[in-house]
Structure formats: structure tokens, C-alpha cells
Image (cartoon, rainbow, N blue to C red; front, side):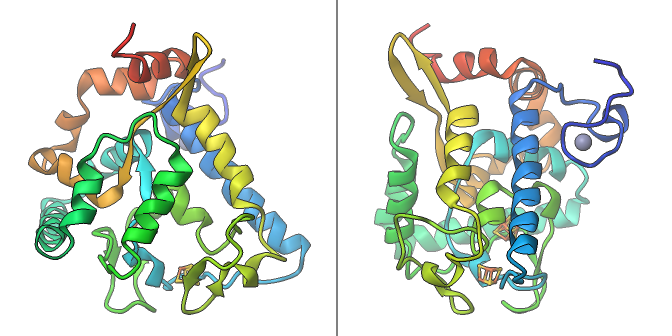
Length: 269
Ligand code: SF4
Ligand code: SF4
Ligand SMILES: [Zn+2]
């Protein structure tokens, strides 16, 4: 592939100017390509159906719910945090520790559920279990900036996780009455205009999260974003060092099939 090739992330810029440190076949590139595909799919779906999505800039009530993300999404966020100034990083860390402190005191069962190693478990079931357990829990995402649920914005918008892109804009075929937020209400209201969450989720699980080996299927760990940040809390001030050469190699450079095998089958190979 020529070094002048257009970047895989959908920016239409040259890769060497856009994502020079991420190889085209890596897990990180797969994730960024999926982000771009999903964003385009959502825009074209709404445009074709001539409706406006209810979600819009500044609306952020859903940013106070707990949701699961994969490790590669988390590392892409860490890569973004390299650009943060120290004050901003300190704020994020403070909010993470505050949130975990709150969970320790008020929601110990939920925190215990995070601590359990969920690798290999059904991702949909786990995400829904966390959704159920945390329905009444409001923890503002540490990347949210602004002053109210209707005026805040995402400070890592370009690398926000997949769930942040599809929540409220796509619909869950099997959960028609799932409550989304006070603006949308239940899933039923977006069923006629958004693409299916499950279709998007399937390619995420197949391409990013799962590896098949000897007839069995292995699935990577997922945790709520706040918990990934907590696990890395000691290193958040220096995300460049936290990512380090080994993580960069596996997640940002190595061909994704090989990387998934190394990551997901590490206990048996
Ligand atoms: S899901 Fe609801 S709260 Fe979130 S951005 Fe969309 S309309 Fe706003
Ligand atoms: S990453 Fe951004 S969009 Fe997602 S919950 Fe946090 S602030 Fe909201
Ligand atoms: Zn790019």
C-alpha cells in the first residue's frame, strides 16, 4: 500500500498525515474503520428516510449511563489522551476515582460485577446485565464537558466508543421496550428510522472481539469505560508510557487476526 494512500478512518486525508502510527490491518484500524462505517450508515439511513435523529450536539443525558467498551476502544482513547494537558488529565482521573468511590459505597454489587473476569462470556448478555444492574445509577462520563445534561459535549468525540455512536440512533430489534432516555423514551420510537443495532454489533463482535480456535470461540474482555480508566488510573498522567511499545505493537501494528490470537488465546497457546 502506497504511503500516500487515503486513511482507513474515513477522514479522506492521507494515512501518513492522519494515522501514521496505526497500520491499516491492525485491530485499532479495524475499530476506526467500523466507527467510520457506522457513522456513515447512520447518516445515510436518516437521510434516506427523511427524518432527523433525536440525538444532537449538546444532548448528553445518556452519557451518565454505564456501558461496556472493548480494550481496543479504550487504548484508542488513551492514544487521544496523549494530547490532553495535565489539568484536563487530572480532572478525568479525579472524576474516575470519585465514581469508583461512589460505587464502592453505594453500589458494591455492581462494582463486584465489573471486577469479575468476563472474557469468554456472551457480550450482549453482559452488556444487558450491566444495563439492568445500573439502571438507577447515574455516573457522568469523565469525558463529558459542560454544565448540564442538555448542554454538555463529548471531549473525545472523534474516538468515542461504538456504543456512544449507536445509542439513540439505532434500534435493538429484540428489545422493543428498552428505555433509551427522556427525549426518546423507549426503543419503539426510533425503530422506523434507525438501522439495526444488532447488525452493527455483530460485525463488532466478529471482527474485533472474537477469535475462533479449534472449533471454539473466544471473546475478549469488555468493561464499562469508567472501570477501564480506573484499572489504568495510576498511569493516566502518562498515557504514552501506558500504551508502551508492546501494547502499541499488538493493538496498533500487528495484523488483527494475529493480534486477536495473541491477545485472546494467550492462556492456551
Ligand atoms: S440517546 Fe437520548 S440523551 Fe443521548 S444524545 Fe440521544 S436523545 Fe440525547
Ligand atoms: S465518551 Fe463521549 S459520548 Fe461517550 S459517554 Fe463519554 S462523553 Fe458521552
Ligand atoms: Zn485516519
